[in-house]
Image (tube, rainbow, N blue to C red):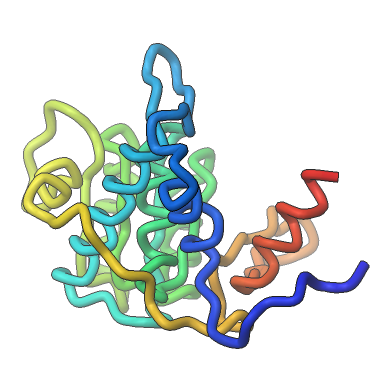
Length: 202
């Protein structure tokens, strides 16, 4: 199947999320998580807040932003927020141990890690060996730390223009399970997300 005919300058988040706001679907549900219902408007604003917060932390295009979170709306906010500013999202498996996170975070050279409080101890165990990680952001209630995701989002603007990425720029990495050796990153491009969405819709 041929790839969709996309312009050379293309940001997948604008196509997959911002388009719903432009189409007047802001009040419709976008995420259902337990007893939470997140509308497209809320998703749009929260993704933009995360993107702006990441920019304030110094994240630039093509830098990596890792997440170590259970399934929750914040996963989506960070995943899309990083891609919207042209950074590369890297969701990490929550079932691993400290030495695995040391390898993965150094391999991807993540600039920022967003982590759940329940998983923070794995990261702190190897913190001194994480050669590229500059910021650890904790996403979760009732936790004290230097950087808290909810506080960063509250202080950030809900408006954000998508970065002028190419359709062939990296959007996110997914690491393999490493069953035949060390985990390896599969790199997915911005145009891959639209191709996958088109396949799913058929």
